[in-house]
Length: 179
Length: 211
Image 1 (cartoon, rainbow over the protein chains, first blue to last red):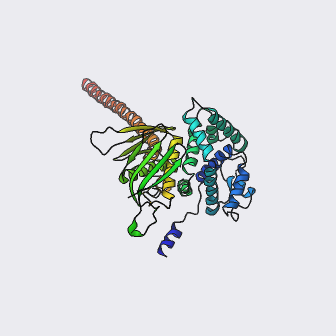
Image 2 (image 1 turned 135 degrees about the vertical axis):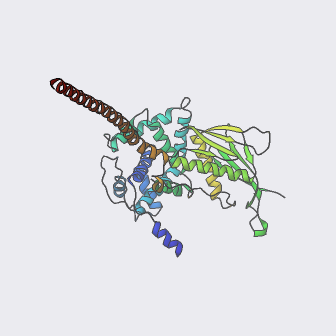
Image 3 (image 1 turned 120 degrees about the horizontal axis):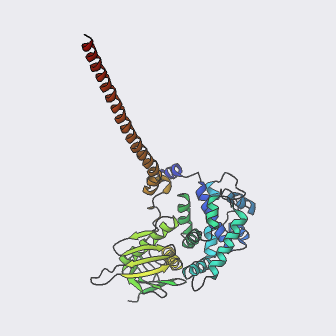
């Protein structure tokens, strides 16, 4: 009872913009790898019994629009439940796509021998950003700068790779809510 | 007595655990509760092995390091047995220090792909029901950014340094001007007094001559 009271007292209800921004960027990274990601996300939400929180593609899209970097940014209220559901989807997707994520990371590690996967990933990521994000924003300009975006892309991929396990959800949730 | 063996694989990394079940707890024959030996095999890298303390230390190190990376912090870990440092954002230097005397430390360079494979292997090992847990994920020990944002030294310096420098420079420049102004004022005053005195003397002299 005492423990429950403490968890209720310290339960976080507010999701910062940085948190949703980072989560959306991770989902964008997954979308870069899986061309049919929106469909896969919906299927995953059905499989994980997240229908109540994420019943359709539009709900997922609306939640992701809380990212201030987006062209269609809208300050909708995002609940902790929907944020956690999106995080779960990101982790499950990264589990499914781990071989591809690893391949891209390895391609960047040995860029002299095998640059193809990395270059393809980078090209598609930039295309997606042009399509979805507000290019006038300074943060987005950093993301599309081909000389300076390597670090951000590697960090996103590595975060997904390190969280693609059974304990990954807990790790990613803690990390995102700390922002 | 035959020992049990469990292998956890992930692409370029495999973790082998050898040990015995705890029969005093009526455990299964296939269970491993007493780990006697472990081996961490990474393709193209030397074999890493040791006792249970070494495994605990290495797992703790890799988990802490991974958490620093996930949290976008400066990734760096140092302990008695192992140091992990980031050379750049795609290479990590692992320095393994032997507990035996006169054995040189082993330095291994790993990429992001191998690092994620190692963490995956450790996670498989941690979540396996056939082995007793060795090390839980050190997530709670990580400081919360939200609470400690104001105690971050770098941020404090970057926020406070520019106004401090500007205030100091303003104070220095203005104080020198005040000093110069005072000097000139003093000189003016002295000149005035001197001129007054000379005038007075002159007037006294002229009166004397008149008399």
